[in-house]
Amino acid sequence: MPGLPRTPEVTELRSFCTAADLGSVGRAAIRLHVSQPALSKRLQALEQLAGVALLERSSRGVTLTPAGRRLYTEARRLLEQAELVEDLMLGLARASGPLRVAASHSAGEAIVADVLAARDERERMQPVELLTANSHVVRALVAEGRVELGVAAARPRATPNPGVRETKLADDEIVCAVPRGHPWANRRRISQAEFLRTRMIVRDPGANARWTVDAALDRLGLRAAAPLMECPTPTAARQEALARNAPLLLSRHVLRGEFFVEVEIQHLRFPRSFEVVLPLQGEPSGAVKALIQRLQDGVAAW
Image (cartoon, rainbow, N blue to C red; front, side, top):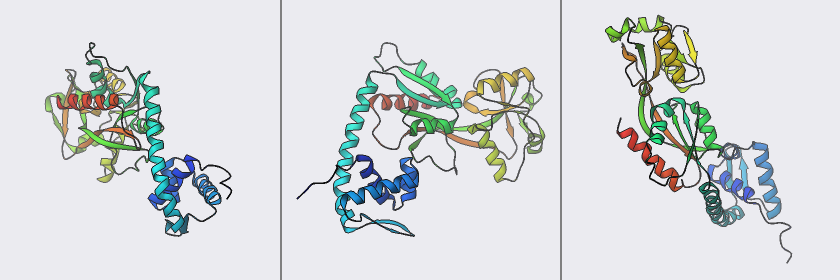
């Protein structure tokens, strides 16, 4: 009996198993970061190779046919082995280079940079390459495999990135603060109306800190005054606030120090959290696990 004209590709088997697991070609395409037509073409190629239908398609999604169930069992075993091989090869490549980490601007200033700087020089630890970007970019870098670990601010109610998994690292809050020479510094508390009518130094529209405040105000049907200035990083925001003696909105954990006084806003708070971001698939390396532990230890010392 002649054999198959070719061996099934791992990408085809992964596409098939993912579609079966999720019950939807569309959701599988999102999970695998491909277009739906491209994924459908892979599945059709696999069915042509098998000579039978593997998935039953309907308006409700896809389910396995009897032949598909038989293939799924063996394909899943093969994919598990392939993932082990991929993890091993990635580990071999990364062991000789730096550990690539991405952090949001606030997470970098609040915890990641301090943890990296505090590493004991006597310890033989893998070098770390740190990239800083807005939180949604951090998630994209992790999902695309360009970094092995991310630390970013959470964004509740937003569409999750399907290529990552996240665990909470620490509580945070966006707070209003003023330089010590500002009139609010002695009051320590302002009314909601005064907050809403005052122009402030804020982060850029793509920053999670900005989104956290805007989303909270939107839910309450409130609108803040136009920004006094939009800044790309927490450092730039602090510098502008000091230069202008103006209020600013930033993470509480990047305002530690002697230059600013936190001001309570009547009936308004802007809580959020920092998250550890890992690729959806695969087991973290020993170096990644060790760094996560150091981050957790650093947060515990806050």
